[in-house]
Image (tube, rainbow, N blue to C red):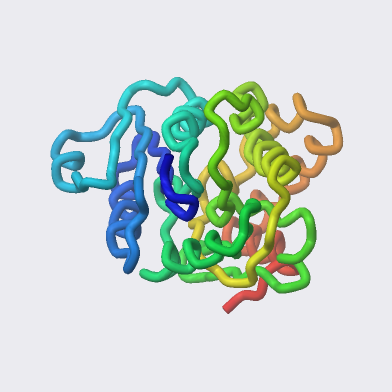
Length: 244
């Protein structure tokens, strides 16, 4: 069993080597490296694997059949650790992020919720304190889950839920371990992908969840069309984030 403050970074990559390299370099630039950096990917060029091979890095390639299946593969291989998902394209805010995480892990046994900064092109969105301390702050790249039992079914994503599996997993772990919010940012998530963009696919997925979820996604869908992507993000995050 690993030490209680050991940490694993899990990175899921679909098909973008450029984003993956950005995330890997962010991990490698840390003042205090993770105990494990696990990369689960559909396909990775062998030259990239060789270039970024490290003692603490492990690659699992071609084993997953969906995003959340890949995330579950990551969880099955890191159950001994405190874990954080830093998916392809996301980065740590600075080179002391893991150091700051480990300091807080030593004095907390629950899930930890740090701040995530969102960025679109040259615009950054910083969570307001009032929003950060609300219960609905579920920024995945800054959520740390403590070690668990390998046989606990409660630790895995529901692969049938698609988009909502993210928030459901976080809420499930908070219920299991409780949580502590820490008012410092440690990661940056870049907007523009399916996780932040309303699309026809997300509309279909939300309709399967509930009618209310579908209506909310439909409003966002038309806002993005009429406003354009830049102003869409400004409207969506106006009340929740401070733009700097």
